[in-house]
Image 1: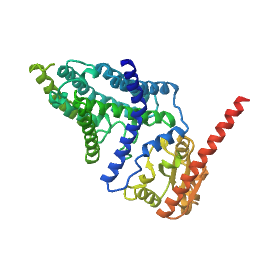
Image 2: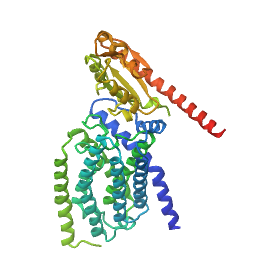
Image 3: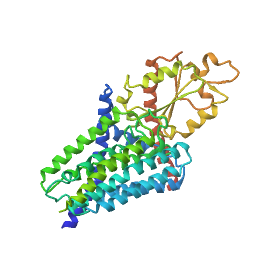
Image 4: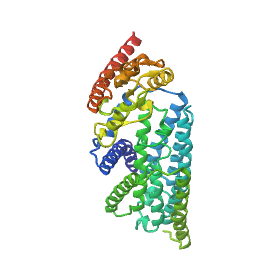
Length: 293
Length: 152
């Protein structure tokens, strides 16, 4: 019976995550437009864009790139499945990193100099985000006594009580992960930066559509990670987690619109300082105070 | 879902005097909010559906114009904006000018004017968007015909 529930969760994630991710990015564009005093596109615009891309011709620069993009999509979706099935958080982290590596390789395999420049920046972004995700994962283990998502959601008190610093640190790197300004270095959703598209320069048609789609999956996954800080044994905590996720997403949009883009070294420095101060100190605190269930 | 719901633009300045460019850029700024119609100014030919070209084509940029056009995936529509892009305009007799954009790439829609007025540019883009849907239908028909031929 339990196996079937897990299968159902995985299927629900695969089917629903793109809708949630697409709606979120539609909301993002709408709110961004309102910040700038304009009406903005329809809420469903990301879906129109996706449908359009699937209808376009795909100009394939090399066949290996298609394989690598396939790997990226597969491992991103797999990470989400693992997470929502209540699997191992550490394994999910490694699978996500592997997916990211596939993406880097795909952008590297194109001849375009913009693509190459984008991937170099993307690697710096990865270096900024990975430590914090890893520290937060260890933090979850120390605070709840398990790496399994299914165990973490059953704790008596929400992990955020023990991991407030990690929550803040994770929020910071979320901006980098979602490629929002000031950290939209490798590729941007707006046309205002000097490199325009970076990593996705050479991708067209349905291949580009797949990238958009897996970005939506990743968005849902990252917000689910935020939710993990809030959720506890009480079913009402799920509602609280959804509210916190939406607030965090709104905060990201606000940050996106308020801050101008920074150079890579500033991003690197600030991300590691935040990781060390908020993540590191929090980790040391729970290690020394011996907080474990 | 129709392609016309998400037309992404690419803007290129041939050898324009910048009059038409300023009009095009003004029409795509947040002030006029073309994103209401799903329009995105991409700057990347591989993601673009509509190619807005201003100014005539000269010997130096004819390869660039050709390459931009070739890098755009089908279906695509080319809009020549301003009289120079249409047939060379005031620069037509210059030694380095080949003529309008149609000397190197197929142009679908001509928007005359010096400089082209914003109303005319928007009108041209609206026509381009309609043409985009038409071209998609033709592409589909060609694909199914090809598929049928393979079966035989």
